[in-house]
Image (cartoon, rainbow over all chains, first blue to last red; front, side, top):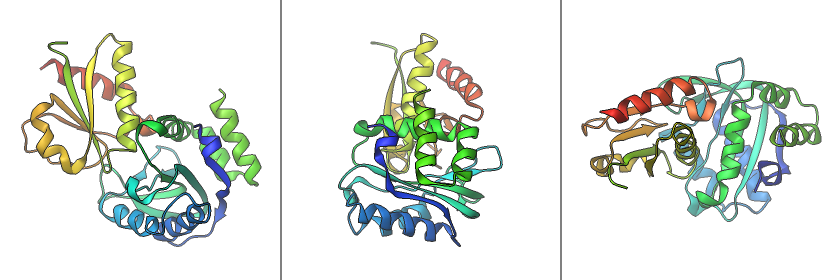
Length: 156
Length: 95
């Protein structure tokens, strides 16, 4: 399934005012929980995993991203929650966990099986590799606007 | 096929970033006419699986004391420096 199908209106938060990476994960985790996509254990599992194996991704421009996620046993159904942040919070760098990354956009991934969501994962990588789209999402004023940007980008 | 090189792609959970990385490497190498066998694993599984691999590509820190070359990179997720990493992969597979 495509990202624009898995990213529900109810799981997008624009201009979230957050103090820490844990805040963001808790906020987005509760969105996935409310949408019935994940088990109650998901949020803590994602928080714990982030501590051991962080997911901050420096994108080379002014805006960086993070893609927190956790093991399949905490997930009922694949989905994504997205937040853009009014002020950056620090995630640790995935490939170099001692280094902090100032993050403005977060995709919390609910993953069930690797093969079934390759399209979604590739699309997220595509979003991360598209600086104009990232900038557009961070400055989007409404959720329909953000969804439209993603749809337009994936249809080429 | 005999002589096909084996790449072990590692990430934290073996389901998210390694899926993207494995697919990206496969496609990039196929474009150059290079066919490899790719296996995904968790970072914690690298020590036990390294023996069966010619190269390890990882998005997260892994053990490096197994005598196999390791490339740590986020390029297949972020796009930054991707071409250079593909060249590095090809170079390391030649050995």
